[in-house]
Amino acid sequence: MKRYIKQWGLMICLVLGAVAPPFGPALSEAATPDPDRKAPRVPWIIDKPWTEIVEQARSNDQPVLIDFTAHWCGPCRLLDVMVFNEKAVIAELAEVVTFQVDIDKPEYASLKTAFEVELLPTLVWCNTAGEEIDRFTGYRSSDEFLEIVRSWRDNRTIDRMLADRKAASPEDPEVLLYLARRHAERGQDHEADVQYRRLMNLRHKADTRTVARGMLGLAELEDKAGRKDRSDRLVAQAVALYTTPDPDQEALAYRTEGLMEIAHFQESRGDTLGVLETYRTMVQLDDREVLGLDGFARTAVDAGVDLEEATRCALRAMVFSDKDARIISTLAETYYRRGMYTKAIRWINLAIERDSADTRYRDRLVAYEAAKAGNTRKY
Image (tube, rainbow, N blue to C red; front, side):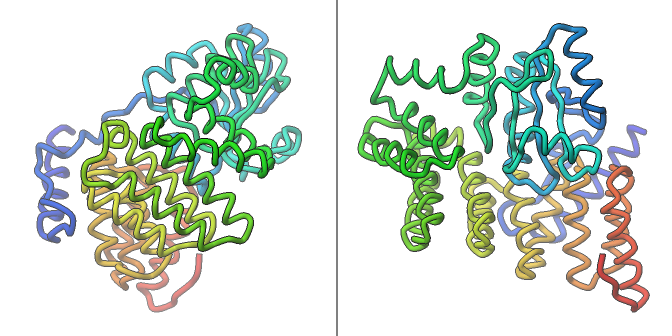
């Protein structure tokens, strides 16, 4: 088995070397991750009835954290790869019943309705009886997530936590950002706008990351109000803060996270070309960053542009992700869109092998085989 893995890794590296990657040198065998290695993650319980989750919480005398998610949700994916794999987060949730709910599954339709879930991701904190205590929506960094969970475990709601922080430091830019985002997720746009603009007035006291996220928050409000030009300018300024030639250490540490948030916002407003350029920027900054490589490939496929470049990016993302099935399926799709049906079939079969439970991959295989036979069918 080990010999097979080594030979497989070498084959991929030779392939990548042959296609002349656009954003950096070819991969070496030494750089190829071990496909059998499993990264630590929050041990989410999935595909169980809600009644069993509540019973487990009662039996163990533990609170419940519900993560309402979906495979197509960009911010959900960002939480998965930037937060739920952090050791501190895993440790903090060790004595919590963690329940992940795919809202697209029919068996969870009633649970989604019961908790009135409208936006994704939505994370709900419940007591041992399964009764909601507090919630938040949207992406949060690992530091923010930890602060929220620790407050919940101390029997403090997010609002109480923010009130305490504001009383202690009323002009702290990070607190203003928290407050603005809390108002925004509740649809309190005027209140959110006030806090964001207070943050902008104090940006000389803030780190680059906080200012950039504030700009993105304002951009979302401007877009919601129909002021697209203002929104575009704010997005451009936020991107510039993350990509300046000499960013501060805070910007460097969170650059990928910040650019991903920008890409997800652009995606939500249907700005496909903007999304593509944001991912292209990510790849140019780091040609081993899986999120940027995969994001570029997926967006290029959706737009039907730069497909050869998309294939090269998907190949690199596949290797650096330890052959993630979702990324392999993107790679297969790049070949399919280029009319290279044999290669598309080969790669989608590998995706099925890596994740046989996802029926979408089998649907794609049917489409690819039909295309190869000359009978194009949609899936």
